[in-house]
Image 1 (cartoon, rainbow, N blue to C red):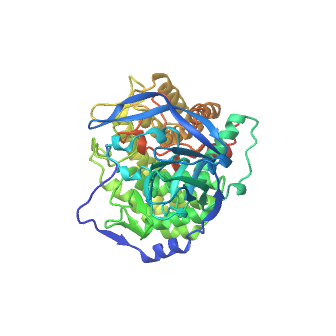
Image 2: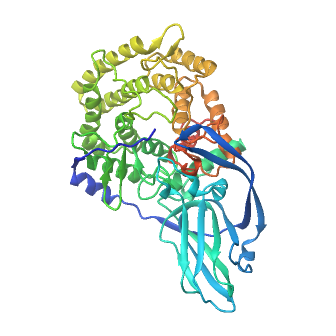
Length: 539
């Protein structure tokens, strides 16, 4: 299930010039103080046990909760907190930044250190989770929980770590019988490389659609830091698949072209030794490519680069990174079998597509290769490389023919994947995006998929983005709008003020990690409703 690789004696190839260009494009973060809006009490309504995803003996759990106002911010200073007392602050909506607050002792005498616990939550149920119950495959160090000893009071506590949260709990684990704590001046220094005021509000005439757009903008803004981060609670790094979708939304909203350019040069600045682009990149403490390779992510560098050129007109960057983009296609073409097919590697995580239990990715990977070659052909023609464009066109026709022969089931009128001939949403959607068939045939295919509703369904907003894209390419804009309002609107109805990493309307407690405690509830690949409604005028 894990989506990472560990390569012994991992060797890379650096391009100091590219890394230098990326460094020169580093943004200055905007900083704004944000204060809590109220004090709340979060209580459990009942507990739901998730059974679909399991890791060892750990089952993902998530609470249905009630959030009740129990005081205004002014009431905080009047509270005297003793051992066992707790207070939860609501910052109004999702924040990313650095927290500080003032603590003083009140009573007889401060004669022992104060011992407090702090917990930060993106959604209310995280406050109720017990981190000791977590045993999933992603490190529990991502859980936002801190224990502090305060040896001297009064003191201003400035937490050095950046947090992603809406709710902040402070619990007094111990003081001494002689004193209590008073907490005042809580503030979060919110940070982002972009400003919400730079984007004109959407006035569609549809209140839900306008709200979806605002939440999409907030999601993208929170994730626009020193790079386009995927999630600001977890993983806080640059993933290529996320970058592509963030960039598309960015072109229609904040228009921070330098951020996209910086991220492209980071990926180009250090690659695997053979020229493969890594699936993700760490920009600090030093720029470093991760030793995880995902075929589809590497291929999507091609459309990400070409989208950037079309949005910005930056021909110089296109020319400079063109050879690396073509290298990603060449690597995948060299790995095809004799039937001109991507090799089915089963459970090995060589391709992402989506979190979907049991999802076979052979057909989807073939489609991503075709899709990326389409962009490669257009890129080659822009740069006058007609020989390369012709060569890629021949390859693409061979790939499409092979895909139909191997994966199209004439009886089902659907694409299948792998030796088990699995039918999934991902295979149909990506084959539509790859334009293996003409538009009218693709339109019939998307409707047949909706009618059949394959058991291997879509789990992430990342996959839903491609589904919406496929609907638009099939001239089904009204249906695309309906699905945006159903899916992303569903998150809002379930309390989202930023969009989540995973959302399955049929299983709202889904997590591929063993627990919802490490799910990300402000995740970049979820921001693209703003792209669709603004780019295509969906109303």
